Image (cartoon, rainbow, N blue to C red; front, side):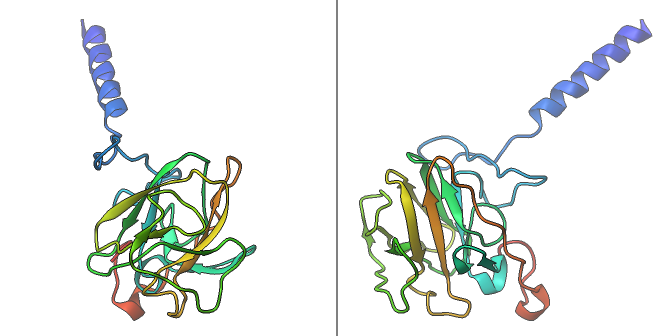
Length: 198
């Protein structure tokens, strides 16, 4: 009898463990977000089909990418990195800042211009292209964009492109591309920032 009780207890614990890994709830139109791969998924709903946006100096750092140079302010994981999604993906661009407005404006398909035109109004009908602009993404809000067009797109934030470090990044839309290496986070002691996305 004790063996049956032990087997039942083990089965119940195993069933609970299998169900306990749940993710964050869905956000509008399409179910829950997939957590990022790795030992721990980052907070705030950033995951495989989400781009997190935040000031690099206070939360997600800056990376000197070996292919594209200095990038900062956008991530698919925890810290700044170049981005990559398969063709046809529908991606959420989520502002991780609580009160700072950002944008996601494509500035080129060949490189980072010194002084690009960076509008704060949306353009492109929610499809990533050489003329796509997200419009204002206020603190905590998000927009969706469809990766219909394969290619490499250089983009930045209308409000922080000229900052140091420049808030700019590269996204590769390809079925074989992978995100670049992540930045080293900025030291929290100099910024007063604690936690992942403060």
